[in-house]
Amino acid sequence: MSKTAHIATFGCQMNAYDSERMAGLLAKMGYARAQGPDTADLIILNTCSVRQRAEQKVYSYVGELKRLKAANPDLIIGVGGCVAQQEGASLLKRLRHLDFVFGTGALERLPELVSQAAEGYRMADTGLDAAPSPEIIVPARPGLKALVTVMTGCDNFCSYCVVPHVRGRERSRPADQVLAEVSALSRAGVREVTLLGQNVNSYQDPDSGLDFAGLLERVNQLPELWRIRFTTSHPKDLGPRLMEALAGLDKVMEQLHLPAQSGSDRVLQAMNRGYTRAQYLERVAELRALLPGLALGGDIIAGFPGESEDEFNETLSLLAEVRYDFLYSFMYSDRPFTRAGRLSGKLSEEAKRERLVRLQALQREIGLEEHGAQVGRVVEVLVEGPAKKGEGLMSGRCRAGRAVNFPGPPELAGRLARVRITEGREHSLLGELESAGEVKKP
Ligand code: SF4
Image (cartoon, rainbow, N blue to C red):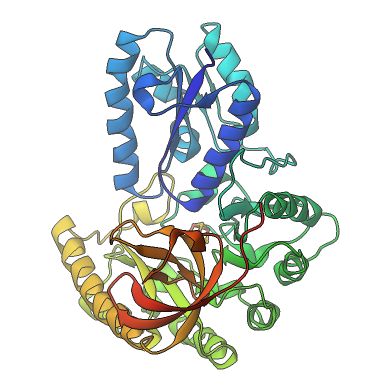
């Protein structure tokens, strides 16, 4: 019987992509996907340390695995990702049931680490020097959508962020490799790719110097691909070329994630974000002038050290001005190695939570209004399959990235449908099918 592996993924889309790569590497070693951790021969945790809460989840998950290891001493357990990078060998000392730890730069050495663990060695590999892997891995059963990394690491050193410390400096993948991967995925049936990087706007092909707008132009030419999204854009690096690519390339969707983090100039400076509130709003205005249908997403941190009530109100007013379509909002938490962690003026958990609640209440209102404004419009939906909730409803995303549900037959999965919106809900839109297009090719 073949061996099986279970990969538990925590955190962002970069981690989701890395987990796919890990699954590909393990498949080459003969590991099939396990049904769950209880039946697996190998368990990999792909961890996130970007927020304290994410890190705590990882520790509680690792704790639960002790029971499985006691019942099956041959079980191999490895911890990868950002917590592994941050903690390194100390994890092996603290958690005796772990077999190996591999940092964000050691992903490609996973097969070697698994083999060594099978022979009884316990080791930590946290070298950060690895460039993005040239290997093209296409999942055995790709879906309609896929993630493709175009760059790893970050050079920005925002004062609250652990990423540059655990993912290393920026490294772009050669454009030809990105093209080859997207091309292989689209030939295997993938219709929508999301190009990933901590700061895609500073992408630069190490061979030709091609920038991110140039990369988008090339990906846009792939015949079997229908849709392109990308994340994340740093506002300070969002230039006219990328804005024009966003507006002018037919396969690039009308959606942009542009994290502001705060609406206060003093806080933005303390965060080392490299732009002011006015500059951020200027970018938003330019984007909206070029692309009136653009859906904007944002990130906000509530309760940064020293954030006053007035400064927080400036963030609320930024929200009201920008009118994000979707927002990721978080309470500030100290992260290892960061400058913000050493700042004075920390707010209590209660004060941070209270601000987060106000932020989310305002965003709920804005989101509902924005979704309500879609009623009557006809949108193009890439139909993914039956909706999770709701009998007879099919579900997909419109070009702007909003979830759209509508009554329709299951045969629509994999097609582009035109749907008239009839209702705007908090997290999704409801609509009626007008027409459906091409069938997904295998
Ligand atoms: S841009 Fe700032 S917040 Fe984003 S990954 Fe880099 S350091 Fe972190």
